[in-house]
Image (tube, rainbow, N blue to C red; front, side):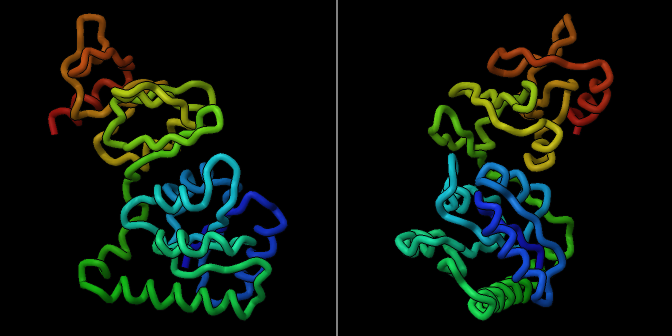
Length: 241
């Protein structure tokens, strides 16, 4: 199993990692310090399961669980608060670990994960084949935090993306929110309809209407997107397909 620990408290992450490293059948462990970083790492690390805290700043564990890609990694909530058990299981959690928990309780959660993963893989031959393919299905939505509020941005609403220092601007028909992530890290998780068209921009191919006389991309809604000379051949080839 590939496991991702998501907790905003370093001691909690360290303790859980130490316990997990003593268990058999775990091939890789990674960590995320908050919900936003968790969603970024799910796209790149492709875990089989998350050990997910509930109460975290900006984006809660329940919000992370609601924003997972399809097919989603399995979720075990690990929290010091018992009040979230019902909504956790409503979010299809495999287990709910109440801190502090010991190795024996963790082992029971891992056994449930193993059984569920085995059940997934044995369900159909197609799922068995999919299990050996490179992981990382396209995301369905992104969580953007703005002035303390969390906004859900469906991938289907994004028209084009441009960089802004350590952020990206997600241009949609409802605005242009800022996401704390680099374009290089974000693009692989968005699917094949997005292509980099400039060192500072990427575009949804299905929305491209034309290349104007100034060499800019023009989308169907009239938006202009920069097109770099070095990126033009690959973009034209993708549009042909």
